[in-house]
Image (tube, rainbow, N blue to C red; front, side, top):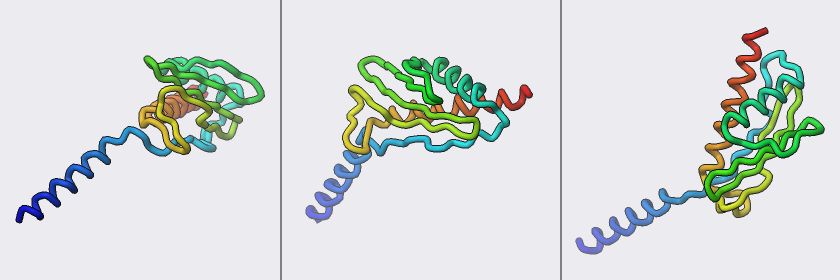
Length: 131
């Protein structure tokens, strides 16, 4: 009986520790379709507006690719955002203090990218309804 209780406690501890992990695979947004009939300049503006509204700073903007940096406390994430009138991507470029190792990174990075993607899509939908 004692052995069963110890085994259950050990399994519960291991399960609890694995649930506490803060890293997960990097989630890139790739070839997100622009469903509106937006021009390339309108897509660019939707990306810039979304990024700046969420605290991202645009550091480069040329050749249909934007580089944006987000600084939160001691953490920094850098993404490249290639775009056209048909689609855009949000791709991991670099980070500081986000436990990046191989294809894994702190889960907050993925949340920040998901928020950016959602805001870009919202801006593009607004642009479409304004036509």
